Amino acid sequence: MAFISSGQCGQGAAEAYTSMKVGELLPIEHESIRFNNSDEIDTVKVEYFESIISRNGLDTTRITNLREVNQRNQDDILDLLFNISPGSSEIEEVSECYIPRHVVLFYNDQASLVGIVEICFECERTKSFGVSANWTIQIDRVGFNKLQTLVNRILDS
Picture 1 (cartoon, one colour):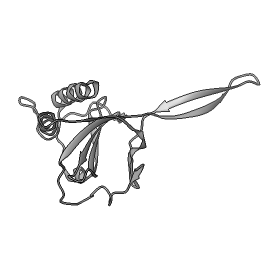
Picture 2 (tube, rainbow, N blue to C red; picture 1 turned 120 degrees about the horizontal axis):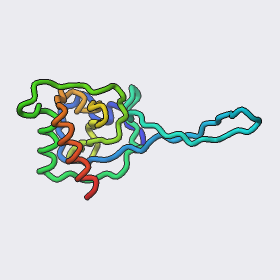
Picture 3 (cartoon, one colour; picture 1 turned 90 degrees about the horizontal axis):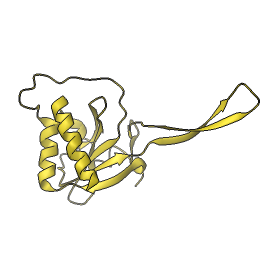
Picture 4 (cartoon, rainbow, N blue to C red; picture 1 turned 90 degrees about the vertical axis):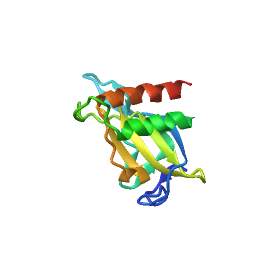
């Protein structure tokens, strides 16, 4: 399925997830034409990252390198997403670049996608879709660093 509407992803539903995967997002690529000061035209390949979550639904065609997450790592990911680290006093936004390159996907017992948390580790922000859109994600800088290490370890395995 390439494009999932909010209804298909269980938006507002009470269904719980039973499994989890992490993945990476592919950049959007297109060619751009640049005119230089002569009569020549240069074609330049441009890549950029953008959210896969929109008002129209979820574009899953750019998700790659999906990896199953075992129960121990699922517990760690959820703990990092929803609990501020000990000794941390506040959540701090570093910047507003929002260039998401990673996702955590939640599936129900029928293996249907029911939620997603998209992550930008550069600006330490997240965006959610489906049942996870109703969750209050609270993660601080220490948590983002730990989550990034954990996600990279899973993706590299």
